[in-house]
Image (cartoon, rainbow, N blue to C red):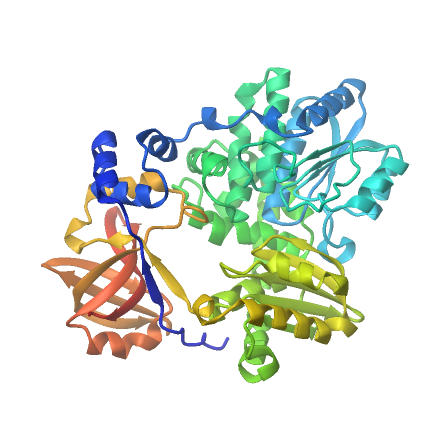
Length: 577
């Protein structure tokens, strides 16, 4: 694959903190002042709020019955279980949708329900809840359909369910349209009339609230912790803000993923990714577990991942291992497809003025795999710091997936061109669409004009959020303990970025794998190994200014052969001022 384009210089946005508040918080909670500053920067200046953030418990989950229509959904499902009616869980093919499907189906089975599930095939069935799926489930004598992570804009499917006498329960977290689907119940915290206090749940978070309510109603609250680890997978993978209930789910779930015990299928997945028995972080989900689950839906059938995660029988280890191995094969196929399409897309951006000269990138081609274009769009955003839309052309129809930058509402841009699409949806940072191929040039003209009008040089300049200064001598065990308590990191709770300077180059830099720099940095006799990822082309600059450098970095911990070390993961490096 071609090397990535040289990044433009980053603008460091330095956080400002009320030192009086930080000092008071450090004293009240007995934590390191550095950690107190980080908490204040994240809006947790009050001791009670900071304590809840650092140490969430299952009791911090809200009452699920505050969700509009959730009581109706619970009543209907319990009636179906009592009467022996068949229930279908209709999921979605990403990690959020697969984990939602797994936890709801598993709970219904434990309650004695006759339950099946259906996850649409990306290429055959398209996206979301469709009338054809309702017809398919009706043919299997289903009386109740529960959608998870989809359905909020599926008006035609809801109408079809009503025609067939099927009760539809929609659970979703995507943005609704003004008119909700005519379902028996529509459970979505983003409903304008929903008083639920946490609006940022992932799809699996909404499904977990239904699980929580069913557990409460049936007297099985002790079951709830067993579902949180699966909910953590979907929550972290869906990149929702890790605050409020999402933080409770993610932190408690990661602890359970680290400790076990696990069902047969989950154990096989952790074993296949060399994570069994390790202390898991959000990065392990984002870069090792989620890609393999997603690969099933992108490259073959999402039911592959669902079948694996539903396996609970200890006597089926061989089947679980086989399914986990298949996920690994699909993930490797996905990586190959992604690399080829990304190379072609970048070439188009770099050589075609109609593409590269605008504030928003839009590229398409015949034969691009629809299961990969969303990841490619995300990689284009990372490389060029512009919103990107990538479309796979299949004859007369093109399927698109887009990703955005902060400050640009991608869904709003698509709504501006909504008359061009046969279907679209999503949110401000990620969206998908279907369009007739013959209208692609018109789409490019209109959506790039929309973006050009709203994005100026300031918004298109890559920026690095820097939390606070941290001299190398101040990196102590107390700081590392505090950072571990602040995990998991992700959207809404980004991994802290510190800066130190001037520091000097004590050793290196050495180029690793043609892309990265390894070096040792020194400040006032304190030495740390540092790795500058994807900065191999800056080796000469670092060497030339090695006597006085400013460095922005994360702190990482390495455990190797019984030794524990703290290293700097360099986000940016520049000549000291």
